[in-house]
Amino acid sequence: MKHAIASCSAAVLISASLAGTATAQSADELAKKLANPIADIISVPFQLNYTRNIGVNDDGNRFTLNVQPVIPIDLGNGWNLISRTIMPINKNDLPGNTDSGIGDISQTFYFSPTDSGSLIWGVGPAFLLPTGADGFTADTFAAGLTGAVLTQSGNWTVGGLAVHLWDVDGPADISQTLMQPFVTYGLGNGLSVGMNSETTYDWVNDVWTVPISATVSKVLSVNGQAMNLSGGLVYYAEAPDSGPEGLSFRLGLSLVFPK
Picture 1 (cartoon, one colour):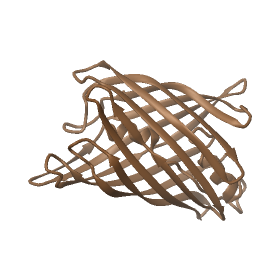
Picture 2 (cartoon, one colour):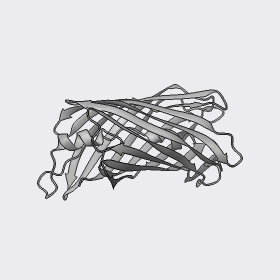
Picture 3 (cartoon, helix red, strand yellow):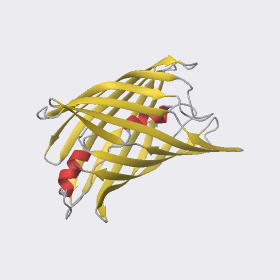
């Protein structure tokens, strides 16, 4: 479940281009929007994470593909509703046991003003849906609150996102917080670099998970379709006894649909 929540955060998407089309925007303009996790722009990210040293004896590996559609809805009167969904697809490779399946879906909603000045923000409800297969689910419905705040100046985007969930119905005791500070710098021509931490704290078991990631992203336009390619390293500064540990990596592909 840590991966489902943390991914709420997931790594921050940062570049795209549609030059030459009817809805063209410069790569840098679109990159700035994508650096904002609650921007008024539709995207469908696919993020592949590989983690090592999981399991009781730290001798297993895990692949997680997060499918993360982001859909803004214009509510009128100067407000947007940003829907962010994370559906993890997992594969565990442990000695003598390889299994795979869909994990629990994380769903967050952000009510955000269309014009909040230099400080961009959004708040709303968060949910964990027990949709996962056996071995990949907490089998518990959880709900809570989420919020994001950031500022953008020049090539810089600096901000943070937080989510807290409590169990509502099901056998698992859940009280967990995600804290995701992030910083992104645009290098121009659709190229960006960024760092973030998808830190989670399990209040029930008093356990921290602190992955720190560094990512490079590049905008492409293929047959008029804007997309963002990204790759980076993740270092686990703190994790439960069952892992993961040390360095891992992530790759990303995001389809982008500017207005």
